[in-house]
Amino acid sequence: MTQDERWFIKYNEVMTFIESNHRNPSKHDAEERGRFLNWLKHNKKLLNAGEMKPERVEPFERLLSLCEDYKRVNQYQ
Image (cartoon, rainbow, N blue to C red; front, top):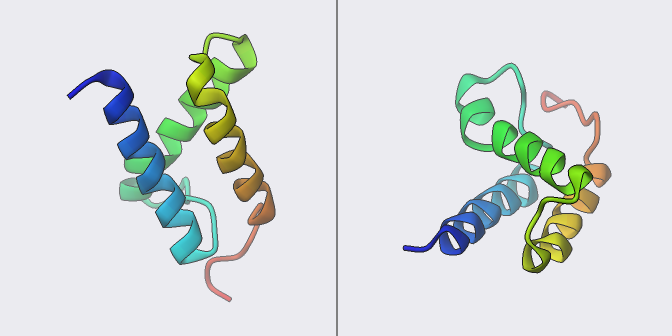
């Protein structure tokens, strides 16, 4: 499995999590932080530094726009 394949698998996992739970991953839940939040933060840093591979930029920006839609949504509503 290539690095790109692993990246897109994780991308799909994060996208599915946000769409199914209607919220962003919590920094307070150890499982969500380890599986999703750290990946998101790392890729945001790569994007902002201009170091992200060009084929990943557009899908990741779609994911970030979805994250903005659910920014600060209380998971216990």
